Length: 198
Image 1 (cartoon, rainbow, N blue to C red):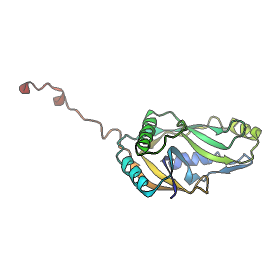
Image 2 (cartoon, rainbow, N blue to C red):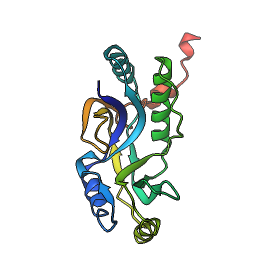
Image 3 (tube, helix red, strand yellow):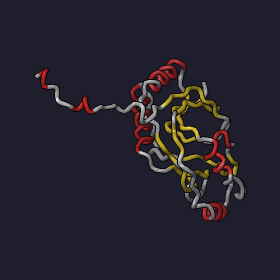
Image 4 (cartoon, helix red, strand yellow):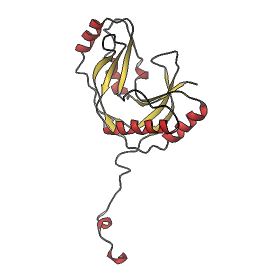
């Protein structure tokens, strides 16, 4: 069974902006542009029955689409960096979606995710990179920022354990509703008190 995780996809324009950050760091293995994503919740290796239950529960999520932009870059592993990432602008809607997915996973018996949710896009895996080279790479690119984009769905993705950084496959997609379309619509008549029924 492939390893599963929920994620947000990166639209083409933002992915092209990210691709311009590739290069200039010896020892970096750059993630392919088509594999950029924001992980919401790592699920891991689960059996088919549990996977079906995850899909069924995720399909019931009813949340609005929202805006994001990618901003800033950094590295994981302070003294021995192991990856380079692009940051994600704060979003209450994204955090609420992630929290709901976490609750769903726990309700069906998966262990809680031990890591605090820190949304990011992994750009490169590092092997034997000098700390000075990483610091120099990051210092020249700290003002990175993309235009805002609309997140209209989230996906259940799979990856093969033997290959870090892709290829990733979107197994299922789950649409978010248009923020304006699902809001209740009131006319002035709706707001009048109905005295005849009292």
